[in-house]
Image (cartoon, rainbow, N blue to C red; front, top):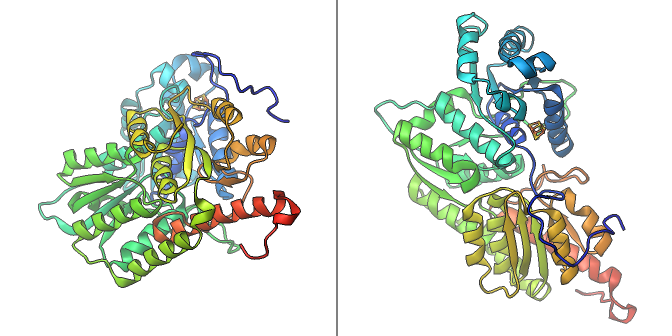
Amino acid sequence: MLLKHTTAKEIDRKSLTINPAKTCQPIGAMYAAFGLHGCLPHSHGSQGCCAYHRSALTRHFKEPIVASTSSFSEGSSVFGGSANLVQAIDTIFSVYNPEIVAVHTTCLSETIGDDLTQIISKAFDDGKVPEGKKVIYCNTPSYVGSHITGYSNQLASFVKFFSTSTTKKKNVVNLAAGWMEPSDMGEIKRVAKEMEARTIMFPDMTGVLDTGLTGKYEMYPKGGTTQADMAATGDSKFTIGLGEYSTQDACIKLENKCKVKFEVIDIPIGLKATDRFIMSLSRHANVPVPDSITEERARLLDLISDNQKYFYGKRVALWGDPDTLIPLTEFLVSLDMKPVYIVTGTPGKTFDERMYNILKNVPGAKFKSGANADMFQLHQWIKQEGVDLLIGNTYGKYIARDENIPFIRYGFPIADRAGHNFFPKTCYVGATNLAIQILNALMDYQDMHCPEEKVEFQM
Ligand code: SF4
């Protein structure tokens, strides 16, 4: 019993979080930076923060995560990190030669109050930034928000530093991608291509964090949104933001800066959210939905109806990021499952409002968001009344083991399984993958745990 001290009885605790359902802001900023082609993320703070952020991403993506740091010492912690950052920018361009350096702050540099605008303009004035190279930046204090807030702040900085508008709008739809796997982004791009919609996705981690082993190390792989495409987002006729928490700020900034109208919808996870995405793209790109996409939808429906009795009534506990949990919970309800316990460490009212609506016909469902929503409380709820399935990141494996519950890894981080880089969970194909994973987990459990006389050859 790894979590033997977790009790079913809840006590009021306002000042203690145990195993938070989130991680820190700069991890999101670092992840988003990899979605720009030729970009090196730079952490303005101590080496320890940068090492943690890199290792968290490396363990999940199983790829070398390259990032630089201002490497604060005791002196910079007291007097500020201006000299360190200017020196770092000089060294980065001399040694690593990226197209773009994306600087984000940490708790330490935010607490000191380092002014990135002033420091980076000094680096330009001192001639530390070579001609044609870019240094962009965003603030990511980790004592507020979560990794999703950091991702959102980085995305907004892309718009601030790159998007430009000429007088002529083009028949292109921007896809502002919320936090998801490169495989999920690849699937969304495949569907958009199938629909013959002209799109620009930003950020775009395909071809960056899902590359193969070729025997040749490339510090800046060929993927990622190019600077030219990022600039052109200002001339697109519309933006679809996928995931409110990750993309709404960037969409608003782009409208204010370049007058590109936008709509924020859910990440296309599950049947209904994918329907909404397809219809939105069809409407705004002015393209019909091809038969091939309708057939993918039909295959998903067929799988669901064939296996309805296995989904029906199964109680599920989930944790992770709001942009994922909202459409995922909706999908589980549409499968006739009962998502009963849901937590996210990312704060925000939208999660509570959406969950309230999605779960209104699920008796006894509980959900919580923000800094006090933690894995400990989720475990307490499970102890009070059990569930049939867990869906979330690797931090749930201890609950799964102690309570003997089938467990599907989903979200960030996944440090102990493979496959999240290969099999998308977005759009109809991704929903099919996910439904199959759910079915297999439930059926495996039934085969191994039911009485011998109940073991069925045909399921
Ligand atoms: S000090 Fe702040 S930025 Fe650094 S690892 Fe901790 S929470 Fe993240």
